[in-house]
Length: 357
Image (cartoon, rainbow, N blue to C red; front, side, top):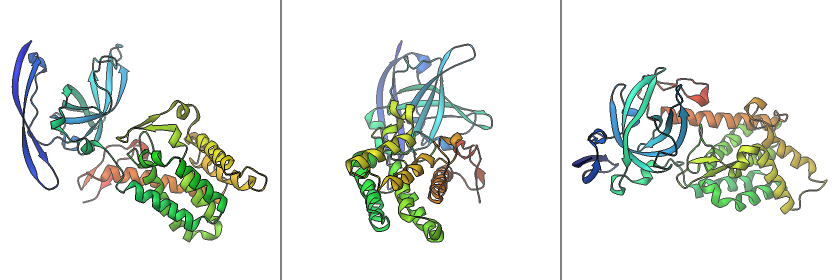
């Protein structure tokens, strides 16, 4: 072992100003593990094939795999301070040996290769980042609007549009009971709206779409049923998922075993019991509402309990799909250069989107 004393110069570009931070650190290590962080701003999107990049990244998830020769390696989902996420391989490492948990910010050096026409990242060296080397808020993906304002908007629209008093009571019961979670919860572990307050953001935009499309197809739709279905369609995710304060989500045992469609129907029953709505007079309307939740994935091969069999259920499925897919388009194209194609997008049938000049 040798003592290595080195200076690392970070260049941070912030919205309103630029500054240099000189960081002096003493490390006990061997020669092979010494690396120096480069002066350029670290961003995954700027990585070039056959190049190297380095800088602070947050660990989003850690998954262990095996090579063909049964040697362990890790797939690390990492997020840089521009909120760009990639998967990086860490060879010859098991989960038990890896010293860091998710949401830890590390300083990493990466090699950039190519696999199946896409950039392929390998984590070569790493250490835990010092608090002076990053700002945690730079790594947190969050909805672009205030959770409080989105929450208030949804309930305001419900009060104005849902004319059925029982449906309205169910909305308020669930949204008030789970308000603390609703403000933070992601809408998914991956693919779409997998950000802090993503549940609210997804529902917020779907409500707007439902109002607009309701004006076009008004004669075919029960507006109270449709808007209630939109507002409540994903409430099962409040139990299906656990979302940490940074917005990263993972499945609960209940979520893995039952799924949010069934859990959502159970939450409707719980609200109805609380509100004394479980009676013959309300049986049919509650059944229709639960059908919207049970069928909103559209096809059973996509996880639907049953297929949509009401105009409102068909509309809910289409609005849900539109918002999920448009979110992926927006997210993929946000930092894409004009005149280029994105990487393949899993949630869009591995389509590569083109950003016009």
